[in-house]
Amino acid sequence: MSVPQVDPGKGWVRLGRPATRSVMVFGGPPADSPETPRTEMVVQVTLSAQAHPDDVAAVLDKLRAAIKEATEATEGRIDIQFALPEIVR
Image (tube, rainbow, N blue to C red):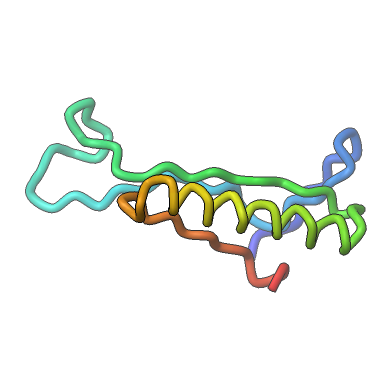
């Protein structure tokens, strides 16, 4: 695990590395090639370490509801996954 990074100006502590995009390609153009299709998008949400647990729970509930609504709107054609770091679970 990486060392927590404190940002006193923002009031939060990053407990892990920022999310990064990775693509595994077998028999196609290299991952950094302009011809490589982008197959996923990652959205990262950062919440203050000082946030009240009830507020964090409310934000997570809203995110889950938005994901459910988006999945229904696309009739399941887009597989939307919700992942939390172990520390939040």
